Image (cartoon, rainbow, N blue to C red; front, side, top):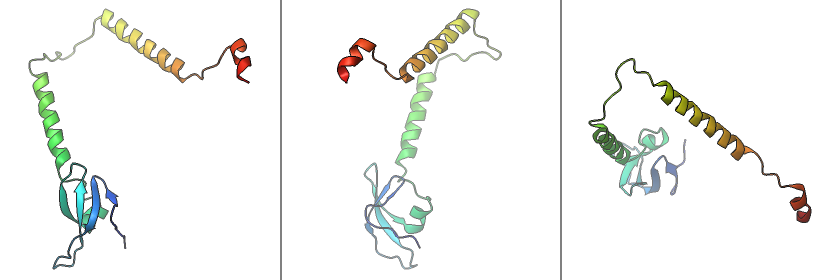
Length: 121
């Protein structure tokens, strides 16, 4: 049997306290979602990831989807079979090469020159 206690986190829910037992003997917990909403959630739903949040993420997702839809209105779509021009392909290739080189240089350890390194020891 899984033990739940105050402060435990289940996805976006944080357990605040045990709620009164229901007539059907199913344990419920008073939980707070990361958005601030407080609800009673059944122990089964917490343990088995059936309830991940109060629904606030669904609202945010719908809002984001609407914003993107509005932003893309009037933007022409590429026709089927569209091909980039040779000039555009060359620019994309140069950009990829530059990005890889930048990542390689950033990943290399910094080595100081011989004369500057002597005063460090």
